[in-house]
Amino acid sequence: MVRELEKIGVLIVSYGARGAAMADAIHQSLEYKTELYVVDKQRNPLNVKLAVEHVVVEDLNIRDIVRFATRRQHKIDFALVGPEKPIIAGLRDAMERETTIPVICPTKQCAIEGSKVAQRNLFAQSIPSANPRYRVFDPAENKNEVKTRQAVYAWLTELGNGAVVKPDAPAAGKGVGVWGDHFSNREELFQHFLANLQYGKVIIEAKLDGEESSFHCLCDGKNLVRLPETRDYKRAFEGDRGPNTGGMGSYSSEKMVLPFLTQKDQEEELAIVNRIFNEMKKGIDVNELRGFPFYTAFIHTSDGPKILENNSRPGDPEILNILHLLKDDFANICYKVIEGNLTRVAFHRNASVAVYKAPPSYGGYRDVFPEKIASEVVDTPLNLEKIAQLEKKTRGKIRVFPAAVELRDDGSYPLSSRSVAVVAVGDTIAHAREQAFLGIDAIEGGALWSRRDIAHETHIQRSILHMDELRQKTIGGT
Ligand code: GLY
View 1 (tube, rainbow, N blue to C red):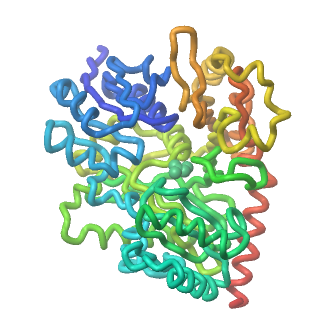
View 2: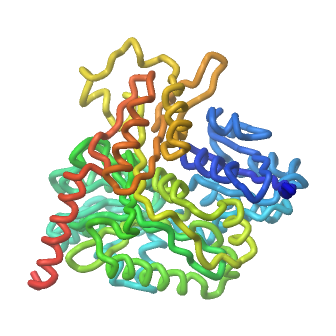
View 3: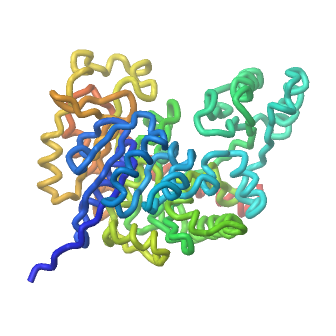
């Protein structure tokens, strides 16, 4: 006899391919018959297709999201939030105060992504060795430009000029600036610093030499459950050149340890995050940490792993790698997170590779490679027919997730941010990569481009060699 599945309603707050992948993972549930209610940044074609109700809240303001949820609360069992903006603004607090819907994301006070200064100070308290050398400049104490310049220059002397300028709040001012990338002399750095100081506190910290990894865990309030480690590609162009982006692609390994890291490196990451978790638990209802409180961007240096930043939400595209490897039912995992009994999550031992395709306006591509853009195809709708066939043919081993794509009456049009992500699994990283690019090349229209060295053997080898050099420095004590 076929068991009748329990029907559940799930609210997804979505932005980009991350939200679409989360909606899809819930929709794929074999344990529940799911009804999706999606609040979206725009009419994402996949979300529109999957949802029983889809609404656009362009700026994802929490008032409108809660209003939408309130009217449907009798049909919604829980909510899942992808993007940082509503998390930092306190969506969980407002939703749980005004409705009966439990929300999977940290509360406002536990969303430490909201303040880079608070993060650094928290790490200094819980595990100072995970911080680079840093100094916080407060606008209230830096009103005199001459004195401020002196203080900044003195700090740069201590750092040997190798510095990173970080505004306290995400996206305030002109954002993060790196010595050697965004400025090549002190005055340029100082002007960037001043432009940010008018919006609030600014950190100047040591620029670190190392290899980056993305650590993720799920938290049910009591336990941290580690998810597969991934490598993100932040720079726009091949060879890690060009401006920082939201992430052009990412990979994970079938070995569950990234090729340039050791088991010990990954254990150290977990130990660091646990120290922060234990510090944060003091004096709060631990339940407030529920969700993805630690998407921690690590950099592995000759002096061990350091934290570049911590996010209070899943990474995009990294969550695509993670969800695509899930063995357990995602809706079930979500229930365990809410009930506080998530002790483990099972994953397929495969590699996965995610790659984004972006429009010419993204990442400065149009300015750097004008000759590669066929202008007549820029404003055409996307053709996702071929990749839909690939999805079927590979029985979902290759998947496509629309991101900044808008469904209109005559088709799906790319907007100005990352457009479409493809994620694929394989026995090895090379195999998963080959499959992911098969998918990427099957997407037509919009003059989209992607970074072709994502998960490429040469790039991975370079990371391995770089880590070898850094480990030699550790041994040699230089
Ligand atoms: N992959 C970078 C981010 O999600 O912030």
